[in-house]
Length: 466
Image 1 (cartoon, rainbow, N blue to C red):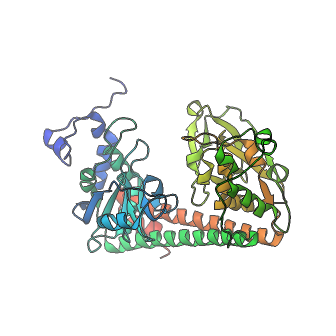
Image 2: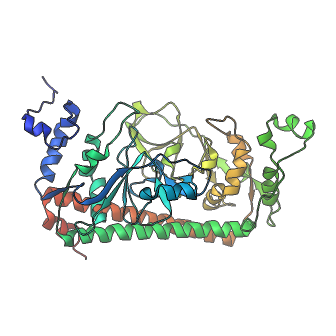
Image 3: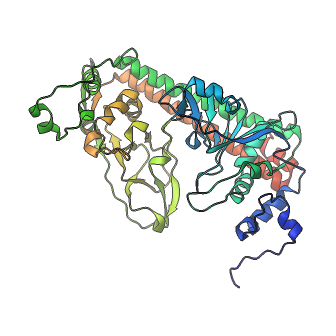
């Protein structure tokens, strides 16, 4: 019996808070029962009782552009990011009025093993609805602070409670809204909730300032290159001789010869400061790694936030690293995705105290000095450069490009002063983003402390300077 975990329970205890009538051992793991005991040491309320609405999203008809329809990829750790969303038209948006996002809504991902339970708090309202892989929790603010609920759900306690509710096998896992309504929320005094709210709102404010600085850097570069008022009004027909097409490129597909690519290249190469190719301005990092550590921090394509370039490595045991874990990277390296490059998965490694490995699906570059790494990242994330990368795509369902496609891209010699201003904005943006994360982490730690050691102790520990 060594190593066997067993829990003896009465039938009444099994049925308590179990509307789905689950009897599987997974649902009654000891760690879940321990968490339940800790939470019920305090006054609690069911999430459904303190909410005005808990629901699953709709199945909308999508369009190429228009009004945001948020999916699981838009829900981050405690925040909502409208970038890289799907879209619906105005008619569909109006038809699905009951699914329109409001200020202080809480979003939770409902589908996919490993993806369930991500929480997003809506502090920035844009026209948007949400799709069926997301649930919405709309709190009755007269009973409890929405920011406090958001924070509780991302604590280790909230995360485990959500994990407990997952049903289905690998790839088919789901979380039901009926389970969400039945989650017990610990109730603390309003003064404590207000202090948590202060941290959360300050974190979101810093994140918004971070976005504005990034957008300012992007606007600076667009203006310098003349892309701020540039429009692609090209014909859809290109006539090329064999000697200037297949004989040079080996490509005969129409996509490769779209006139818009010529227009973008001409605009870049006509920059008054001149230009050179990536391979002459940056060094490609191909350093392999020796598997002599117990674990490594691994970066794959999905670990880059396509809205801001943030890279979040995941620690993985060496024996569990995928075959494509190939390149040793370090702080300051630039990672450029070769898979679905139009998504803009490009970022700068900002870690310096971890054993970092990245996927071979990246081209990894190191700056030499003429062009700063911040300039290159902003360039590659501009819509015109992302458009240009489509020229080199091979494949349809899984489009990829090669190292040489990236290394042969033209890079304009941006004025040194402008580059320094861009770098300054990006560095300040990164700093604000880290401050935001620290504030959210502090709010989360304070709630966990209040649950484990009491509200008074949490106040003395985390709010002594307020």
